Image (cartoon, rainbow, N blue to C red; front, top):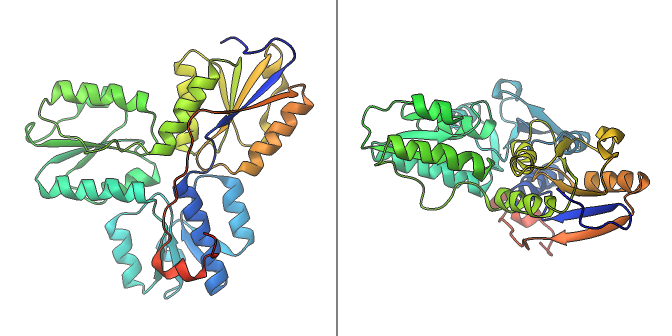
Length: 321
């Protein structure tokens, strides 16, 4: 990649970046629940995959757990943005937990598609990261009919009882580049395979990938703010590298290695959909201190998406929402 400007070092602040509508909603759900009912509010798994966000909410009274057994019977519990399997929902009911569901509506869409395909007697090939919370939740909608396909090699090996009755779904936070190759291989092996009516990869994931690829062409280096366990943040790095660029995933400003910047005249800065803007600002300040003083905001795709809150929390939301 070549630098977009030669008169001094440049920092391209890429937009869209950071929080998507599903993440905004999930965080707001926890904050409103704490306001409405008081702490502690239990949350199953990380509400979103970002350590800064989780630590901030924990300081306010959220208690993050990995299993329902850790939640006292009758307590309030929030399901994270990544969604959960029906068996988990049933267990919560048996333990008389007062549940608030913060599942992203776009993840819910994939769950409904899984149910539809399973009822139609299809084998479901779920493209995604096998150990990701979202994939575990989606698989749970039809465990007997679902197989996870994580890469092209697995697409080559997977078998189904009836090749004429098979469908595929995808994890919402994957790279469209990853899924395109896997889907193409599945279509070749199973010509009758069905897919969802609309792409499962969420609008925010696609927008952020297109933005870093576009602006990344003008930069010598792309830095993506996000946690290591954030799938969509990792995919942003992969998109840049796939286009021939250089990119690193960083938790915050302390993760920047000065050696990365030695030959760079222009750096593009983005963030995964679960990374807060406060961390982006800290990274930008650090880069300015390292000589990237020519700052340019570059908006590739406008975003104005907002999801409704769960009904039980609507009355506690600010009137301006």
